Amino acid sequence: MKDYKKIRAWQKSHELVKQVYALTEKFPSKEMYGLTSQLRRAAVSIPTNIAEGYGRTTDTEIARFLDIALGSVNEVDYLLFLSLELKYIKDKVENLEEKVVEIRKMLTAFVKTLRGTVQKADS
Image 1 (cartoon, rainbow, N blue to C red):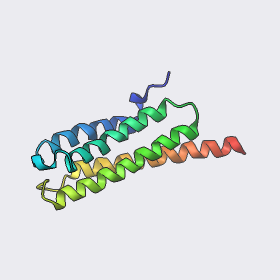
Image 2: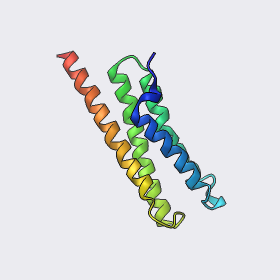
Image 3: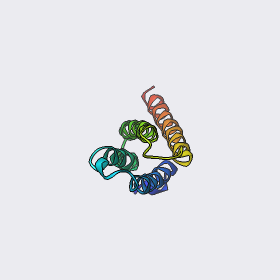
């Protein structure tokens, strides 16, 4: 059985989720059902889709879920930017931004590898 917890992108995104939860604890209470909820959901979606995709049987299916995870990475990236602009975050959260960039690169490379494998298999 495949263990998604061994995937570095999953490990990094799981850590990102915990950091996002800690960060959003400090957001204004008026944002509980707005930005706080949206940012948390987007962050949780990344490792969730990696885990779900890794449980699939074909590279095409796995790549589809990784694409969804990539969309969530971009959503988190924007929501962190918005949080900074709204001054819910006092300083640039470089550690989080670096982690987002790293996860994006990992997932992009993983998808390219999977799609390359699929193309070779179809040839």
